[in-house]
Amino acid sequence: MNPLNQPERRTRLWQFALLYLLALAVPLGASYYLFSNNSLADENARLKKELDRTHQEQKQLVARFDTLTHHLQRIDMVDQRLRDEKNDLVMGRLTTSNQDYLNDIAVGLSQLRLDSAQLQVPAHRQLVRDELRAFDLFRSNRSTIDVLRGQLAKSGADAQGSARLAEELAQTKQQLIICQASLSHIPQAPSGGTGASVAPSVAPPPSAALKLQVSLLQDQVAFANADCLRQRALDHKARSKERKQLLQESRTAFIKILQAPATEDLKQSIEKTLEPINVELGKEPRFFGLF
Image (cartoon, rainbow, N blue to C red; front, side, top):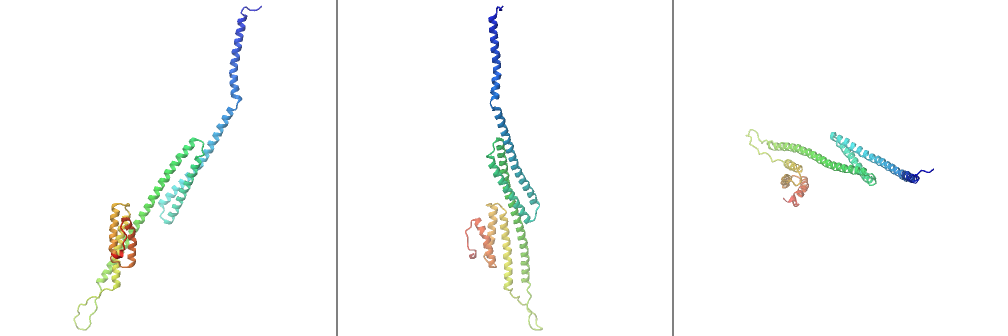
């Protein structure tokens, strides 16, 4: 016997079956789409490749940075030795070693700049740019330090030269005093005859050699004074008023000696010394022997 609502039951059964099949088809289709292609495997391979490339670039950058750091440590050690060293020969060797390390740093930075063009990770490229900027600043500061160190060494040499000139000037003044004293105490010639009163005799004129020696000593004293003025002028900044004034005073003192030089060697030495002074002061070249 068939139920009275047979058509309604059949309709509801078909509706249930269709809904069930539709609900089952959606996850099955999604699963088929996800697992039927190689998208996940390709994604994993890509991520693994990027990770390997990142590790390789990091290893390369660490090696470059370690090399640069070792050069910086060596430069720091050499600087400490330079501050304590007094021997000029050893200081020259240390300065050469420092320059070699700086050249190695320049080569390393050039290689690092070339390698940065091949980097794939943006963070690594930014890191390399920051390091290159920092090392460029270090090299600029290092050049300034080297220039200041050279000026300091030159100032020390000028100070030593000034002290040496002062010592030579003192010795020359002492010799000049001795020669002048010897000229003023020339013994008188004994008078002839016996029993007669001794007449005062005139001291013979000093010899030409002694006069030349006195004149040479006086010129050497004047030369030392003029050269001291020149050394003091070199300690001032270029084109400064004090430098020009001292150079002008030194030039005037040298020209005064050239009016009557004691020897020809002294004259040539003064003319050679005057050449850079005239160039800096803008004076026209002259023949100093015609004053």
